[in-house]
Image 1 (tube, rainbow, N blue to C red):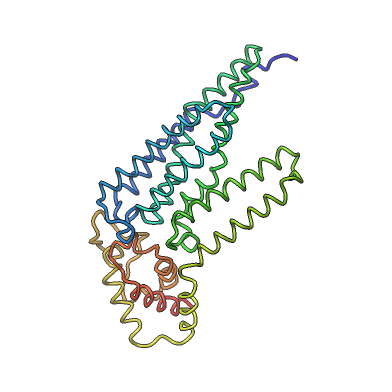
Image 2: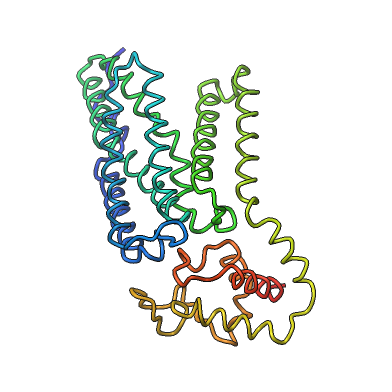
Length: 339
């Protein structure tokens, strides 16, 4: 059989420039959004009080340190497979614990997503792309690629098992009802990572078996997925479930005359720093999403307020120190007026 030509292999390897621009633009966007306002996006005084500079430095530590440690782990000899897997798990979970215990839950999820994204991308740039390019060049020359490098390629490709988690974590700010601050940031992020590995394993095993899940993996995979899924559901419900039931029961009655006034007072005290025509919050040039809270516009945004305040997404990092009683009262009012 004749070796493939260069023209036949054109496009087989993903362009280095494409992934390089994806990497750098992602870092720039992350910095512009989260490093400009770390007090709002990364820090939760209820978890740990720290300065904006300290939060940025701690974030950069993960973005720089995780890829370097990952590269060291990848150099473990191929014969030490269990040691390699154990080191990978400890490495990732250690970072998760560190950020879950220092940042807000939203900040920790975004940080872990960005850190894993950087780690996966640097792994591609440092090894997978050059190794693939080398294998393609060997095929063009009519030579057989080095089988040992193929094993190393397969090992480093295991990072793809975390790709679903990276996407979920980076989009977590848009799913407040799912990833609300439940007081279990470490368990929540760890659950997302485990579900990511399970889902990717199912896809890989099914693909290699001609589109059918191998019978020896079916029950184990199903039980693991159900167990972790139930755990994720408990984490999402645990903290606010009873309170939400109480709020729903009281929300059926008509709002009293003093309830809108109370809501206005809370919004003025805790939300107007950002949601005003001219925000007074440091670094905020315009109201988020153009939403300005006034007595006339509050009922219009009641549904969004109920979700954002009830799930503790707002205020970001509780920067304005909204009290639990205020959060309950505002959520109750917003739930009643959003019907």
